[in-house]
Image 1: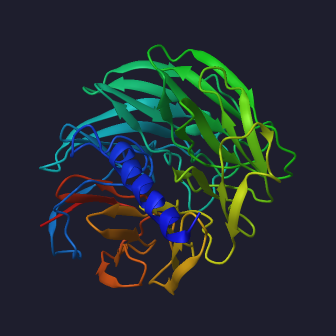
Image 2: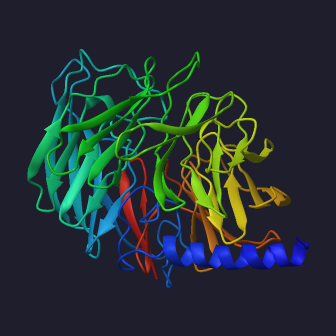
Length: 421
């Protein structure tokens, strides 16, 4: 097929993908990690381009405890989790809590105890982690919070706990990280500990276990922290879940593995993205590579379904971002890249300020990055590099953005900010 016609078809497919996968139910809802599409795409029209600790800060509130879960937003309310040390305790005792904040005023509406953490039994966590790192998920009037091996729970939007589940036991390494997803009335969780990694589905209404699927991997370091993504291929849903040394597609109804691709990589964090008939992943430590995979196979398709790979600039931690025909990346060490998503051709690679853990988002023709030092770097979503803004907040930031139509919500080590004009 001539190149110009392939690009025309690709452009049409990209537009259709953006229309069907990136539009939230309402412009003001940001309901899970990386938004309603799970891929970091926002339909906001009035986001600020510039800010700092004083400029375009509508409000700033202190947060109790410590947590790196990203905020989620629905019906004018923000939800997030935190771990609060128990006063006078000599051990690492904590209360694991869910918080609700009014998005317009910044007023804390409720602060609810979900689980108690027994410090004598709590494993050590990595320095960049917390005991409240998975991002909540909200659907309708239900909020789902996940604390990794410490348990999963459902609350209503008034803060009442509807169910708790602490049955999914596994030995964590460095703590928790993978956020929950919702598919066909089930909360699906990646449980990749130091041995016997698995996926599990809990009934969203009751919290009861629907299925548990062991991950097929021979990795020496089996722990990972990746949030799955649900895609549709030939009219059927697949759960795409990267783990150590392998990415697999799983049947949402049964947990059966559909296909897998193997690689060398562990402690996998970046959430996959999907478009143009390709799944895009990054394989994390020690030497990451971006892989583009056709998801229409069966069994081990490592030798047949990998369309292209890229090593230079691949991230260990931030997720990828697919916007139209281009795939955008930012590495942990601050190398930003723009690639042709179909071919893997590099349009540009440039160094941007800082180190990165937060995942980028797209809105109104811009790529928003957030560095670990709290600098908000804004780039043009174009095939030629253009830096539009460098916004110093100067607080440690590992969480990713939440987005309203006219505001960014940024969680730092101690505060939650509303950034708006």
